[in-house]
Amino acid sequence: MYTEEKTLNNQAMAIVADTASASNLAVVEASGIMKPTLKRGSTGSAVKELQQLLFHWGYYYGAIDGIFGPYVESAVKGYQHRVFLTEDGIVGSLTWQALYSGAPVNMPILMNGSSGNAVKTVQNVLKLNGYYFGFVDGYFGTLTKVAVIQFQTNQGLTADGIVGPRTWHALSKLPH
Image 1: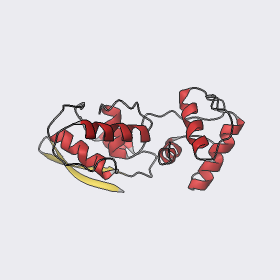
Image 2: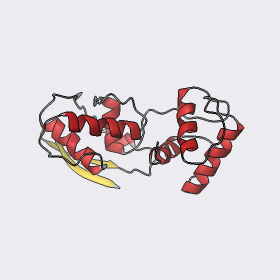
Image 3: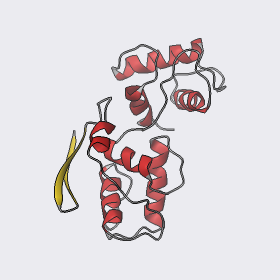
Image 4: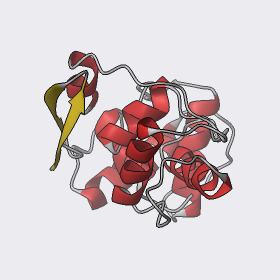
């Protein structure tokens, strides 16, 4: 459980993200947090907040100085990679949500019969970590389902073969 007090518009607001919860984003979304889009060259308190969040998740160890330079950009890209976001180094709405929740956001629920790039992502991560031995073809068939069930079992998740928020979160912790 990660709890931090933040001040927004002269009003204290508790931000709580339970990184084991399926509803990680509910707090962020319900709180109405509006954050600016940040990129290299940005400065100010929002960048300090970004640096603190990146430090919390283990992606940034530099000065908390409010300057979005190349080191911060690299940290953002690393975090975006971990949570399956586009690795552009730009901190927009989805990256802010992922930083507050510590988990992937806006990911589809995948199951037997699903197809597309999200399935390729799951297959790649599972293959890299010794769970999946088929082709990375973007089709969620029997081999993918068996790999997902084995992974879920090993992670102590409900082993239903469906890739939902908890499974995405667990996948994001694996090397990929």
